[in-house]
Length: 144
Image (cartoon, rainbow, N blue to C red; front, side):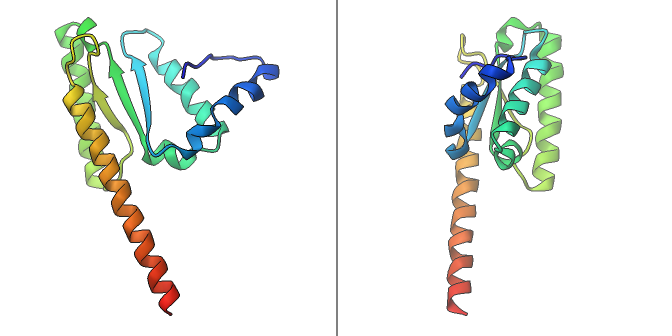
């Protein structure tokens, strides 16, 4: 789904209604053109729209950012971004939650797609574990 920033209020409700299915999504892939000079502003636009949809839980637990077009970056910029991503994943893993998940890819070259698939698999595994724990908790409550 494409996003438009600064949408007039008259269209805002209509646009949001087309995105309501995102509330039922298990995972949200936020694909970003990392070469766009406005990519941080665009990220904030998407975050604001998701917040309006009341998808706050998904914002913090099930959004996987996909930084696309890394092939268009010079080696220094790629290395700097990879360092940032690695640091955020180390922080995420130490906190034992799925916030700040990011995969760097080049859709054109296929670079990083294996990592993207692995991250999606990891999120699916985490969701399955959470669902099993929820079912077990309900069984214990019902048994009381």
